[in-house]
Image (cartoon, rainbow, N blue to C red; front, side, top):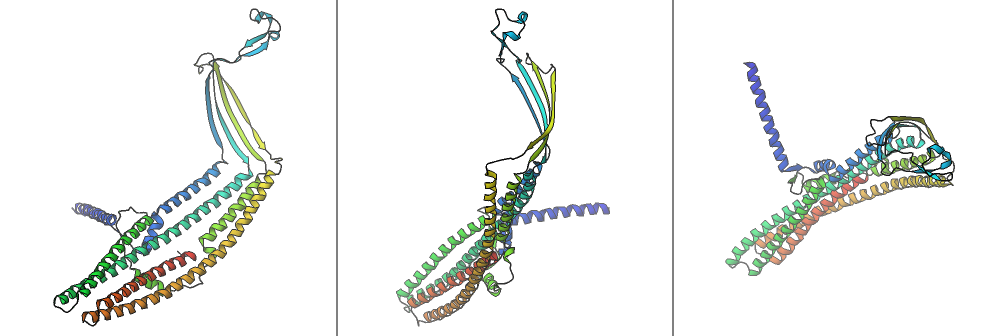
Length: 458
């Protein structure tokens, strides 16, 4: 009885868990919710560029085994079956053929046609070869590992670029959403003012000019909303592409641009705390130096001899009928060593080595240049970040002042102490201050991402 109850309980548990799993999948499949950090992490796995770079890394790993396998035993099988439609004929002097065996009419000095082949022949063979010594092989093993490291570094750089693009795409969506929210609030305020003004105009307390002016303000607000909605749609399309999503996949960002910018301002950047040697660009440059050095080493290994061992087993059959497989087949075997020693190339190998040595020295210069460029870029990004913070703080204060002026002008307008023209001016000033505030927030967020990217912290 107890076992039956436990079995029923287990069955119901499975059904409930299955239903919860399907429900969660449906919600996830319907709409994806991301914070900016989550969107960056998602893009770093699912973006199209990331998938391509993963294929490159996988291919580089296979390249290592390809190089290793080239130094292991190589076994080949080959076969051939021939039918000579016209059997080849050779001409022999009649003197080497006994007189009693010569064809009728053949005399000394004539040529006798003789065939040494059969109409059908075939052969098959097995061959095994093994590299004994090849300097380039051992250099190649080192080079493939360096190539894998370079591919991994390139994949890391691609991931950084993806995270940068994903963050900035999110910021565009969030700023468009904030602009839309601000414009919709302004539209509601303008509609309310228009309704009150039309009522006052009917009672003779307002002029038709005030009504027309407010209608114009409503139309302008509606036009702004249409433009912002289109900008938001474009920003969402860019975000979906950056994340590697389908074009119709619903996405919701859980952050707010102003809260993020506030965090970015409070976490003011510091110049110290990072090393250029940790930057991915330096790692790529350093790996390229190692690669160029190995290429030089490989060219120098070309002066060394190459030694290979081989073994071949072969059988050949002949016949004047097409089915030669019942006849006797003749065996042959070969075993030996092949040695190749470079002697003289008229200076070609030396010139190649000198060119590669110059390429190696150039790569070291590029590495030094990369270090200086990383330092300069980091300093520039730091300056831009702090400058964006200063501009953001000014924009916040300007918005507060513009709102105060607009609120007071609107109060005066409602009480009949101000005209619609002045109200329009102050509202336009306030709207511009809102736009500048959001643009400054966007600049702070982008400059922070740029600084993190420049210092290798993204």
